[in-house]
Length: 574
Image 1 (cartoon, helix red, strand yellow):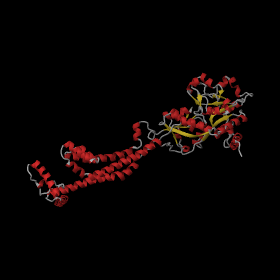
Image 2 (cartoon, rainbow, N blue to C red; image 1 turned 180 degrees about the horizontal axis):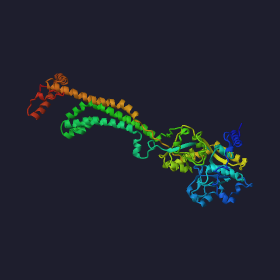
Image 3 (tube, one colour; image 1 turned 60 degrees about the vertical axis):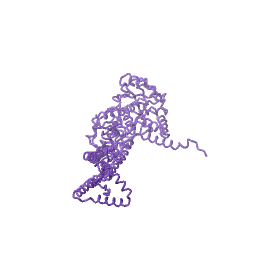
Image 4 (cartoon, rainbow, N blue to C red; image 1 turned 45 degrees about the horizontal axis):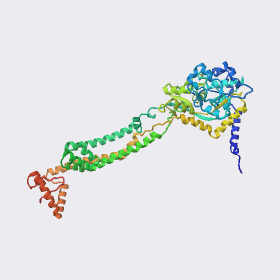
């Protein structure tokens, strides 16, 4: 049995129509007394919105003609919903008047190219729905017309028959639903706080700073201190060998590096004589140098391990900074560091969040800074006039990427969930229910098939700035492995050197009193046993020793007192 494709979407459409009907039947919030809000008596009654209508009313006849069902959408700048490039040029009367003239909402690409053009999520949505054939117009500059003013204005103009809707508006404010009808939600957006990034935790830009930032100064201090210990031990022994033995300093460092053959070859090449002292030096410090190199390799391994982890974290870790105090309990003295868009739903929500139950009738004397546009809020925060700005997630991320560098501002996490808005259109009562529901069905369809999400994501992908916060390695995590793997072998290396020196002093004292050291005695004994079993080897040794004795002393006699007491025994039978 085959089902028609429409049957699979029928339940979704039925549910969406039910929700739309409920929204239209109950436009006002049950917790809000609409009698408290009188747009006509309000000081923000929209006297500065759409001023051109009072000058050229004939241009707007389609918005109220009974022969037409055209809806006129009024928009204000709100990127990325409504992008007005080079908007500062539209403060002049000619440009403002032209932009306030009605034009088809779906034909916006070629509009006003001489002043920069317009665009945004709202206009892209108009193109995807039947509202593309409706009319759009600019409400005016933010100094003349804010969102709350525009809502009051469209309500008052409904009494004159003008079918006005506010486009690109973020809804879900009870007072706005008293006299208006919200459309189906196009998207949703959370209220966020954007603030100045702490310089100590910010993303670094310079190459040198990028190299040192994976470790904090405490960790670098530990590495530096341990490295200084290595240098002291190495330099002390090498210089002692160089000064007191008269041998090459490079030879000592070759021995430290474990290159004994290179050390012997270099010593023979530099001093042009046998390298017995260098060999004795290498033998004398063999165990100490092994422990020394073990400690050095452990230090290198620890550095490489943690530095690699820190660099990976440096490149890929993302973490937002957070406010140290709950937003709902911020003292009034702290609120002056925040900026909020003046006369907006955002300010209404912020007012109810931070001033709830504290004081009524603030009027315009509010404790935070009130910026005329979201762009100016960003500029104030960037320039230091304020520390934080309150905005919507989509708008805030767009402005972060457009107006700032990633190292300047960031999104701060809050302990409280501030608010979530639904984004869509807001119709006055002059717009027919049939027309509203037609557009609502189209908006719901865009959400069901994912087109609205893709549209919003396309702007976020273009505008969103990744917030890379560097997490550094602290001193404690470096100190612990150094105490376990580096310092013990280094200490043993120094201890072996000290004990060996004391032992040699005791042996030298014993030789001075006519007592042969046990090691030398054992060597003579072993040599005599070997010579008694191998006469041919003894004869060859005698010939070699006799020739050397004749070369240095002029005869074949050997002075037994000249025998080396370090363990080289000479057969007196020679």
